[in-house]
Image 1 (cartoon, one colour):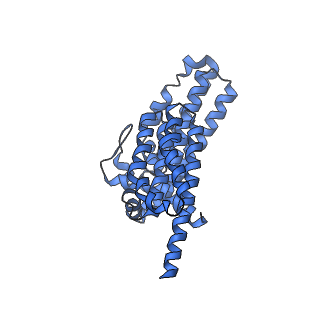
Image 2: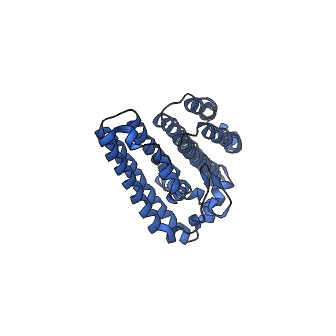
Image 3: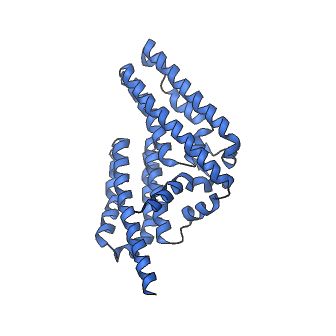
Length: 270
């Protein structure tokens, strides 16, 4: 794909779910707060929450070092994360980092529960902290686009694609959400997203793509219906599932390039 497409895809992934802000949408952990309609007004709060979360994890690691897993109480990690407004701010704005945050949370939690060394636990916290600050950066950028009134255009593209290229953009974003839900320990919901994405989006572009590369379409059909669902249902690691998604997104890049090339050729003819 072209660099222009990658930039567009990054922004679509980051901003696509902002459309949900004006609806009554809910996430796995409940309603999205009204604060997501006013990101700029809440940036200081989000920043404070990221610092609060990191302090909570550091205190937990110290308790782990001094008294082990029983003293650390790693189960509280998820409760802390779901208690902050930043949780829904990042989920509705940049799903790839949202998935990384969940992966980081469970990385710290699992390391403690497995009685890993303090160095290994701190390594997992470093990954979590990095994901949290990346998420805050993504929300800050989303706030700029929200202030400029650019979210409605993205929402139209994501929720109601008007052509095959827009549909592929939406599919790419949905696949990122699959990884997020799997990292969130919601495998059934992840599989549901896979199936719905195939039925509601990919099947709509199959006909156009088959004429351009039938083998590519066949590969993606297998990925949607076999490879990715099986990776989730067989309990593969988040990295493994992310790897399958990344592979699929590469194929979607190829499909987009074929569609763009076909459109250019038709334009030249007429």
